[in-house]
Length: 183
Image (cartoon, rainbow, N blue to C red; front, side, top):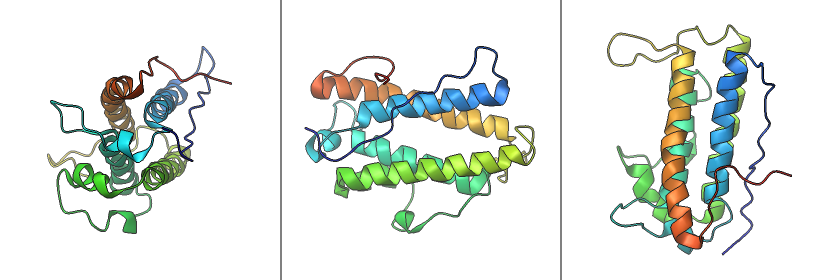
């Protein structure tokens, strides 16, 4: 089932007395590593297989979380604008539908690149003042979430979808476990 589709699943544990920023970033990075482990190394058939009664696929999860990373980077963090990889976007659920046309290599590269853009944007905003700063986006209520809220929201998106990926991967090839094996 595997192709050249390596994803980084390394977890770097913080100290037991780490501060808020380090712990929140660790939680996000750990969820990313868990997600990468659950979706990594699969061929197109495994990534595109539906898991009834849901219409979700692992491919759709990968593309959705890549979009979430790029949305938060562009809209909340003031990072790079959406790139050409999202030029076909036509509204809600587009990433879920269009993932069916993407190869494993395209999906994994899309997600890896979005994560790298997000990491760079987080490093910039955190170096420029920390989590209490307002994000660049109005939440639609006249309020602007601070970066702490944005970071927690991104982590929660991973927590939710890593649970889906965990179940789908077990149904695909029996892979189970909480954290990826570490070197």
